[in-house]
Length: 339
Ligand code: TRP
Image 1 (cartoon, helix red, strand yellow):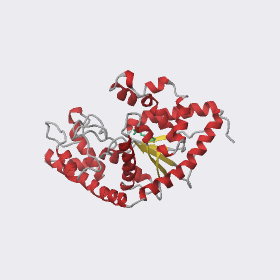
Image 2 (cartoon, helix red, strand yellow; image 1 turned 90 degrees about the horizontal axis):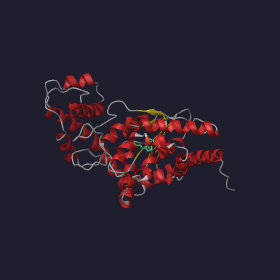
Image 3 (tube, rainbow, N blue to C red; image 1 turned 30 degrees about the vertical axis):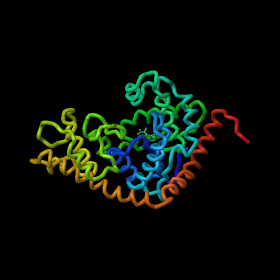
Image 4 (cartoon, rainbow, N blue to C red; image 1 turned 180 degrees about the vertical axis):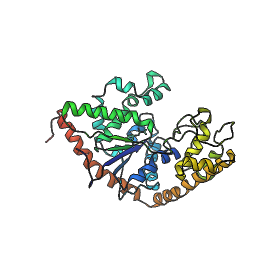
């Protein structure tokens, strides 16, 4: 059942519109999405149904959903080549997610580290069931399109495993229906850490001021955040797995992800330089990335109707595929066809 457009394998990925997109989202996801779009048949969605697993303000959610889609385009996703759409525009996502939820063992869901992390921060009484069922919805996103490859940060590998296991279970019980997807982790910069706390992944929903550089940050502010990044009391500028040196390693990782230089070249370039020089160099790269992205963002947000027309075309293309897969899965599970 492999989905093909010509002979191109299919790629699907998504980001939640649950905060402002960060340089971590760009280097860990968007940059790779852009890079692979000519070689694969790509589907990129704004996963608003995932965002509501924690409470969202309705007006904010609406605004962030459009903003996220516009950032995908501003980052270089070409809507003539890739399919860009909003998850909730395609009801098949919710419908298949329910069918998969009913097949997902509680044991598997309880073992998901993202669920354990997120639920640990709330009282057991108030955790929304959506947080637990989140992986079944993600599996539906992927399986509806028969995606062959899913570019995600390595923190999502467990959800990909879950998707494969669930697809296998469905295929085994009801007959070959879903394609088993493989994970595609980006190379350097896969994991950008918090600037104020370099042992935790940079998050778009973290409140503290100097945690993340947002893609739409004012350039002076972005620069200031990099200049204030946590480092350490050593002097040497080199890549390191040492927890204590995570701040410098993070700055070097960002530098590498943007410049594409090798670790050796970067380390020798910074030999005999200080942390101030490193921060200035990283700030320059970050600002150099943000500036053209923001220019394109402003341009396309100012073009009345453009973004909505892209999302409408995306919805139509995605719905054709998703609805076919949903129908097949419903028939296999034993739902009576409506006449
Ligand atoms: N769970 C992913 C994340 O937090 C977002 C996501 C939802 C996703 N559905 C997806 C990623 C489908 C890839 C494919 O990063």
